[in-house]
Length: 226
Length: 226
DNA sequence: CGGATGATTGATATATCTCAAGAGTAGTGG
DNA sequence: CCACTACTCTTGAGATATATCAATCATCCG
Image 1 (cartoon, rainbow over the protein chains, first blue to last red):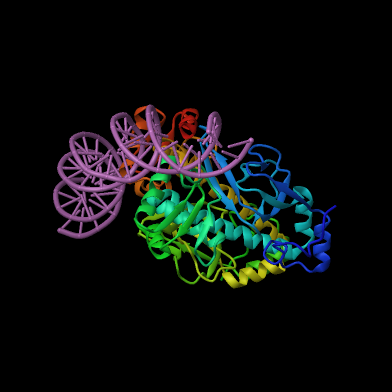
Image 2: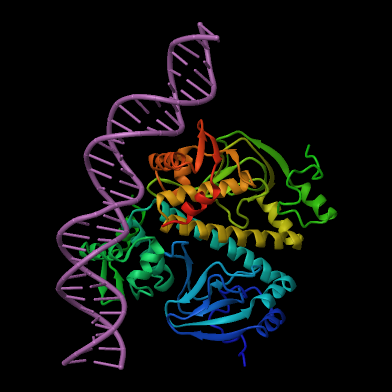
């Protein structure tokens, strides 16, 4: 069955953080852990919107598809992030694992009931959703007004903050093509911009996924440049 | 002073819709009506985040500024929409009236207290914020992956739904330049796309702001085209 | 080691931007 | 009521960033 929340890796950072022991016990009865392999989806665009979840480990993407069939990634999910869309019967996005990942999954309707029964949970979810909205709007600015070079630099800064706080080296959770879907670019443009950053000594690329930020300051400048 | 909520134009559609009489009376004590002239701002990027509000009439825009100084509109607000960012000390966006407008304004901290005291209000705000997030992500798809022609068509469809449900003619609340800021384009490109739609008989332009959708179906197709 | 997939690089095409000029609309004040 | 002046909008020509197409090259995995 479901193990308790005592050993949860994101106990103090997920939506459930503000719950007291009794509330947590009630909520934990509804949840199940689920492992995902890289490439597996939890939510499918257009399908029944069956689940909500907390991300325990790994990186996921939230994708929308253009009517013409092109993909746009509208959010990246990291450990402790909340996933899902309460109060909607069907899902307008898909959610797919970019790396192997682990989730704490709740049936959507039960989770909605938990929201109604547990005011700290509702409030925390509201705060998170407001944060997500800010992030989404910030990303709109990037998509609408930044150059390819600034987009790529921004994404690297963003991922480094999540995956290697303090700076240094980390593994990219995304392929070039996946980065292109996040940034509204194509594969070749992403590749060229990375090559240029490496040539200029701002980053160091090691193999397909290895990256080190050699000059975070310069990278930040490029993320903000016209 | 502040008149009651009985004559409120958006009584049954704004965040306060689910409140009972007592709850509404308590909330209404905190709010004041405020008129805005076209061009006036209620919220300034980077400033103290002092207010939340309901839009009673008019159209407003929520803008973000690129570090390089370029503008991107991240949301349009219509009557009954909620405006503001609870739980944040400073504001990351500016909010400006595109037409003369009327708001029902609440001091942010008092509104936060009301959220805590009134569970239907909190739940309604959560639902709205989730809707806003969906809309924002949908717009990300447009910014990242649609062509100029599809962007302009999409915006027209969107505005028509809000301003002239049922189709037909309405006045554009935005100048060409303001449309460009919404779509991540420049003025000339917006103008050319509109001219083309008119030449093709999909819309009819009358003066600067007048527009009629002659062929909503064709417009929809163009909004979805590659 | 070999094959498959993903990444890089180059040449070319094209959508959108930029720059520049002219035309249409309002609004203003005589 | 009619210039006059401010904008805003349109249109065109040319520049440029990014996309597309195509080939080669790494890297990873079995």
